[in-house]
Length: 256
Image 1 (cartoon, rainbow, N blue to C red):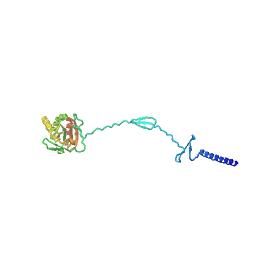
Image 2 (tube, rainbow, N blue to C red; image 1 turned 60 degrees about the vertical axis):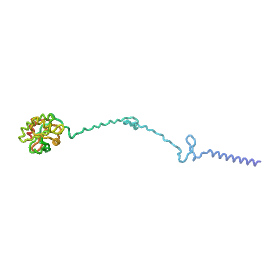
Image 3 (cartoon, rainbow, N blue to C red; image 1 turned 120 degrees about the horizontal axis):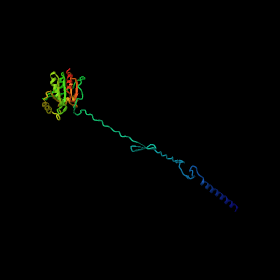
Image 4 (cartoon, rainbow, N blue to C red; image 1 turned 180 degrees about the vertical axis):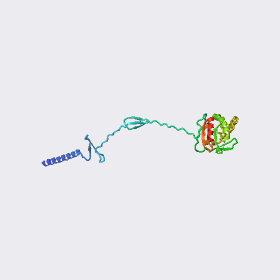
């Protein structure tokens, strides 16, 4: 009886010892299988997961707004507006190589007595019969070269002075070339000849039907008169209606 009681006590003690071990094992934490946060709670993790996950605080930088012609670009706290003033391109004026023909009512330059270097450009015009005549045909003689048209008032006004000088100096070897700007529309050979004949002028008239003379001398307004010396140099030029005195002085400068 005593033996069975002792055996029961031993068995009970062993059973109690095993139960205690199981209970201890169940409540003892394993450092390789858990992580504790500050609150003491337990969560499982894997080796790839960091023990402490820290989320960097998100820093939002407030960029300033810069408004440039309606487009917003955030770069600083203050808002500035840059206004670009549009540039105005000014279109340059067109330069005409052949300015329209104008009528000069008064003389713009005085006849020069000095002789510039270089020869007077040659050209070919036509007489009343259609025969070609060139300026070079008269080199060796002083030449009075006048550009005119019958519709030009100042041209008509100076014709009596040319007629008088022609009668006075043609006998002394001075050649008068009265070049009519015969464009075929505003001025024709018929209209020019009609004016000359009706006015009783006898100086020689030549018709620039191909603008050879006008182009050679860059004529942009009429009347215009050139004085050409015996060796073919231009010694004087007068733009506009020429006076009798200027005409005679110009002739004198090429007779020397």
